[in-house]
Length: 281
Image 1 (cartoon, helix red, strand yellow):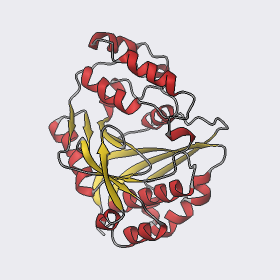
Image 2 (cartoon, rainbow, N blue to C red; image 1 turned 90 degrees about the horizontal axis):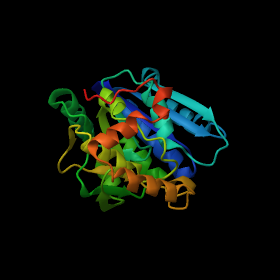
Image 3 (tube, helix red, strand yellow; image 1 turned 90 degrees about the vertical axis):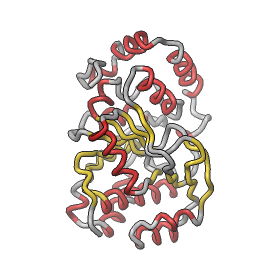
Image 4 (cartoon, rainbow, N blue to C red; image 1 turned 120 degrees about the vertical axis):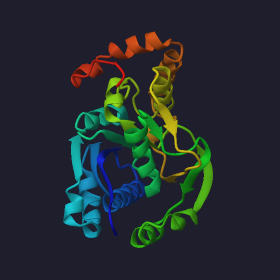
């Protein structure tokens, strides 16, 4: 199949494999992105052992060509910490991005090719800073997949109708996938590392970039496909940071635009990446 040129976009995907279905999901996502697009993918795994290397790399190696594998940068960081600090991991990958467009991409999400193309085009040609590649509302396919369904999807040129056969329509809002102008993502404060584990950071991200005056848009009438998975410690209300995270979210909503700018300009985590300026680009 002929690849679609998205060489001006990098997909950054944080990962911790906490279940068998998560292994299947990231394998599916990597095969899809790297076979469909001429693009860059950065995948960072933070865990006590490299499960991606053990269970995923061989599987994608059997499906992808060697030149497609080279478009993947896989990073493993050993950590015994039970909390998955997704926002910090995203920032560390964002710091490596060299393309004009970057996608904050969930390891369980899929988008049809034309939606990815449109999202990048809106940023490059229409000067959007942040694009949500799905409509708000009932625009999520919850996919209840199996090994057999995933194999059919991969082996039939990623036919999304195969996934739709085992799906429910569900609400979509602010998570899953976002496409950014890379400089705007950085200048707007990157990911807020004060949110740890599962939290309302998806809502805060949207609120922040709208409040700061960035050009935020959506692709109308488009759907996101979410490969369902086990909800563990870092993907539910059971994580010990949920109260603190919600308190931070409530506080940030009380700030004016100027106060929000000052808040992000003062964040210590930004200094690690040598990004300090919130000036819009």
